[in-house]
Image 1 (cartoon, rainbow, N blue to C red):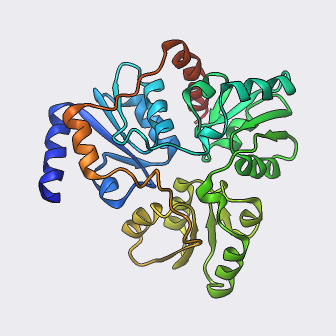
Image 2: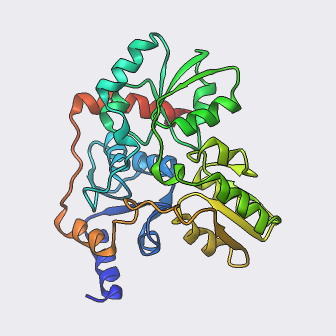
Image 3: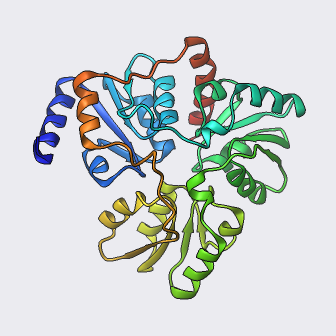
Length: 303
């Protein structure tokens, strides 16, 4: 099939099967354009929780599809490319988390959504980069265990000095590879352009940014800004929406290393095959799901 025919078939099957396509901002442009909803992890979680569709096609990575299933257990959740994973999520497992908790008894665990269902189930509350500060402010404890992203944890600690944030030593391999020298070079070559960085970047890079926020917060910043040129410090997939919404503005990527190979695995044919065959269904043990639901739902109730 041609690309046009493929898109027509996707739309036909989606209507026939009462399906919805949720895509992350880091997906390739063709996927973003065919999706019903494009957003960051928080938005996708919110949409998964409220959708009336019978099938959810989650075009992203595995932890996002698991989150959709946790929140919508009666829906069929499909991950078009089953091996689209998240290296940061793999940096912690349940046994490691249990040991971490034993080292710091009575400290609540705040779990970044970039984590497995089993890890969420062992945590007290989830967060995304959009709402991490709100989530941790809501906790009465002054000592908090934050997993698995040390960069986001360090950023939170600087914003909330009244809290002791003890972070797991995980990181996003895509954002973590951005170098301080790249940020300094960008400032020198484009002094009029603000650097907009994701808090998954190292704190040395974040310290050089003019604005720090999630993908949705970066998109909102650009939309509301009167400036015409921006340096974007998050995964390159966000450039598609930025260019669509702001055709009169210019965007430069902070680093050429800002590309997540797992986010780029899904193609239109994978969406089509998922709708056609309903393969790659996400299944979660119900005991695990119920515990993970509590952590996710606590977050959503704050949003």
